[in-house]
View 1 (cartoon, rainbow, N blue to C red):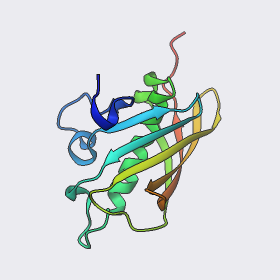
View 2 (cartoon, rainbow, N blue to C red):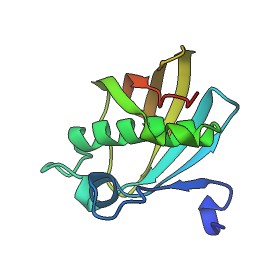
View 3 (spheres, one colour):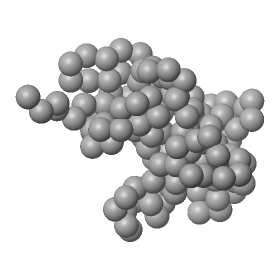
View 4 (cartoon, rainbow, N blue to C red):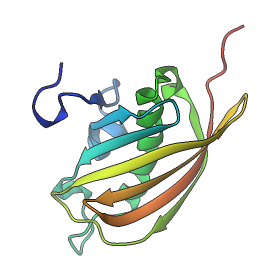
Length: 143
């Protein structure tokens, strides 16, 4: 059970040690808002910075990719942790700051038998940092 500011959140991290997610992005915290929306939070750190001291664009893209799956788990679909990203598009809208939590507001736009069509926005406080869309290939359901 989590305590402190993340007490009501689902902690999401890669269960496999020494992977990109675990070493480069770090754990996130997610909370569902029904079966089509979720919020995913991440505490930013110095290793997420670019040479100018702002959040690195590659890190933002990696967090967006991670947030789609953490959101699906928070929406009650943890089996989709093994799904795969088919495409991901990023739009960088502002400069993120190291040391401030990063919030992803995630939404499932459409679900088909094999795919999720999703979008998210990344914010720090009320400032928009980036937005993204993605197509995720579902894990096949055993018959």
